[in-house]
Amino acid sequence: MSESKLRVLFVASEAYPLVKTGGLADVSYALPNALRHLGVDVRLLLPGYRSVLEQLSLIEVHENIKLSPLKKPLRILAGTMRGELTPVYVIDYPSLYDRDGGPYQDSTGKEWEDNALRFGMLSKVAALFGNHSLLFKPHIIHCNDWQTGLVPTFLKFNADHQARTVMSVHNMAYQGLFAPEVVELLGLSPESFSMFGLEYHGKVSFIKAGLYYADWITTVSPTYAQDIQTSEYGCGLEGLMTERQNQLTGILNGIDTDTWNPETDPYLARHYNIENLPVKVRNTQALRNTLRLSPSKQAPLLGMITRLTEQKGLNLLLPIIPSIVKTGAQLAILGSGDKKLEKSLQKLASEYPKQLSVNIGYDEELAHQIEAGAHLFLMPSKFEPCGLNQMYSMRYGTLPLVRRTGGLADTVVDATPDNINNKTATGFVFEKNDSNELLSCVERALQLFRDKATWRKLQINGMSSDFSWRKSAEQYISLYYQLLD
Ligand code: ADP
Ligand code: GLC
Image (cartoon, rainbow, N blue to C red):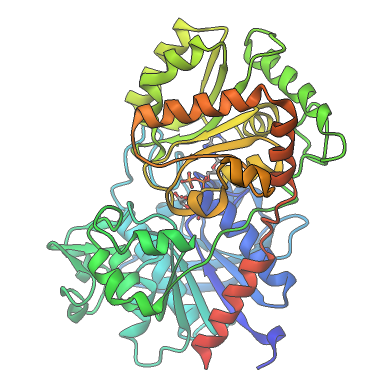
């Protein structure tokens, strides 16, 4: 088979810029584009959420598809994003997807009660493509996270299954666990509801279904592929991951170097690159203005953009914010999620209004401005399958400070004296999931911040690193071919 003929259906529950809650959306946008640049006929399958229907101009490609247990027939629409390469298939079934609120939760943050059906149907439609029952007949179905975990099961138990399946784990902590009745509801094979299948402690686990039945498993960084084989990070599935270690590969995410480019980013006060790095300060000033932080020229500015969940290490950061502020540093935090974390952060912000800016919500523009304006970017994650913001930061000359876990361990090189000398250092890394360690690391970074020449060298090391998707997309292509052999 020549490379140009390889056909892949990339199935996901979110894709930038149509619908996004986190890094999965960035990957679902950028990886298919990178694969297309390398000659793969990859197409995206998404649920027809309201935001997707509103942003794409769509035509009907399949009508009248009857799929149990849905009462009415569904339609498959197709379109492409403006200026983009990847064709997008959209499942049109308004009562499941066309609603107010987010892709997984309503506007109060409560999980949609029919998520098993919503994402079960996403997987079922993907399996129709996989059976070659529709016009586009993929060789490979690339599934992403629990929302697409049932695709390999539907295919496995269908006599004329055709496509091979890859299951990518972006986050093992979200598993899609539902009552056993879901087996009958979705028409899953009763045989699959077993310990040697998709059953997990008496429930149906969508992620386990994918991990058990997919032809191959990938994770979004090499270290996370090791991590999930341990009880600390495997979220109960470490045994299965260890059993399948020979069909498990960690492929590091790349970043979209057009969307995240300080030379062209439309949200920035001033554009800059390695040659005119001093211009970056204009973005720092603009950010301080926007966020009403004190206009101090000397103060280091620390940024953080994150879903507010246990994963992201806020429990380490919160208790040491007063100590950080005491050093004279400023913090700009953007995030949303856990209401308790939101409140704790807001309370602190009211105590230090000139030094701590807390912005609750989702704000693409501010995210870019923090990446460009901050000096240091914090990611003290408890676990991190890959993490994208540390790579955006390096591209923007903003030094990441991270815990050594998952993809953070694979992408950031600590500023030890040796690494500084051999020109590999790109940021700051600490080991333990512990507040004091985080604080010492911040202090170490703030000390180096005073040494402008060395700081500049680290910025340049980061800005000249290659985090583009090409290498990783090539690895996925080799994997697809290996599965077809
Ligand atoms: P995760 O997927 O675990 O949330 P990543 O680092 O892989 O972590 O990706 C997070 C993505 O979501 C980044 O593009 C980041 O800029 C974006 N993001 C997270 N929270 C917000 C927010 N509140 N506003 C804007 N962008 C956000
Ligand atoms: C998940 C992970 C994050 C990763 C992203 C994209 O949301 O939490 O670490 O970068 O997926 O793969």
